[in-house]
Image 1: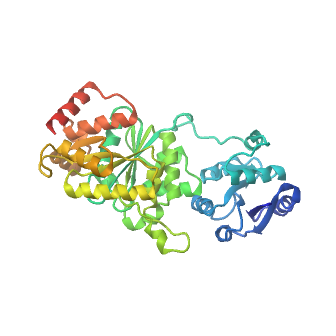
Image 2: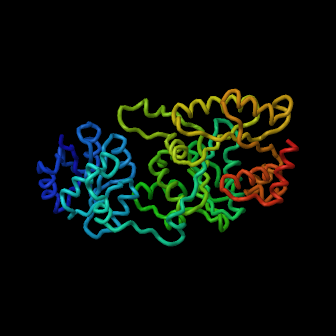
Amino acid sequence: MALQVFTAVTGAGWESALVGALDRDDHGVTVVRRCVDISDLLAAAATGTGQAALLSAELRRLDGDAVARLHAAGVAVVGLVEPGDDAAAQRLRRLGVAQVLPADADPELIAEALRDAVDGAPAPGHDVADLRAALPAPTRPAEPERPRGERGRVVAVWGATGAPGRTTVAVGLADEAARLGVPTMLVDADVHGGVVAQVLGLLDESPGLAGAARQAGLGTLDATALTALAWAVRPDLRVLTGLARADRWPELRPAGVAAVLDEARHLARLTVVDCGFGVEDDEELSYDTAAPRRNGATLAALEHADTVLCVSGADPVALQRCVRALDQLRDVLPDVEPVLVVNQLRRGPVPGDPRREVGEALERFTGRRPGAFLPADRRATDAALAVGRTLAEVAPGSPLRAELRALAARLAGVPVPAAGRRAALRARRAG
């Protein structure tokens, strides 16, 4: 059976000749619809009558969200660019188009690329080197990007509703990792009430993550652009601030957030993401068509993270919320295995030894033991919040800071200085 293909290459002088060549029987491709714009293409994709789409880089209003919607509809995408237009090819790749060919490529090569895109991998019997050689490999700026072979890790800091201290943990981990000499990016992706900028005393009206996601959607985000959008708090710590107002959440599309995190991997050895609490997909249940998802940014961060930290408080209410949140996360993202981090551990809310009691309770109801316990230190956190500084700056001897430093070292894969190990040991004994 012939492969059913949509085209959206309007305005190109070679369109008619290409469509005619692709429709030849020996190519195994049938053009079922020639779309006039991206809206027409998305509408056609929703009908389920096509398996692949052939589009040009010049298509108006083409962005990463449109490509993501095509993929969600089960339509594979192949891009065409004018011969020698490397910038257009890179833009399509950033939008999520894996297969990009020059418009003057042989029709059989284009037909083969369409079949490969549908299959998800190069088909046997055709040399994939032909596809890779059709266009030059994408180039990236040498600075400030990390070496291409090195991809940084992404750590998502998530937790149930309430005040378990997600932002305190995220900021502390990023700051301590940077102080250990690890190039770090801190991203505020909380769509309900991100406050990383306020916690660090930064201007929260800067474009930050919203600006980066917007550029990612247009295919123009690279290491240089991401660096310009991030605050340089210190040489090894950059910060992408969050939304200044919660009602701007539609600006953080899941595909855009995922693209930002992917670019951050090339810029920082460790990227720490402060996530919102919501993971349910209830917005999609209210619409018959593709709808914006307020929790989409959180889900994208959790799905693309190498490590997910689930932050819980240490009192009975917080523990109950944590157990329910983990059940909900398992329903939505069953492949995500979060590491439990118990924050605000102190004597009083639970009887006996708080570390043992909380650890046993979480193991009984979630099937996993906490990976870290962070002691409550209200005096230190209040002092840091009052002046917009980190714990290391206002309370270097804080037991909370010592545990955050130890956890940051584990996540970044670097040793903890001897003084830090002794401080963390004293904090655990005191807890």
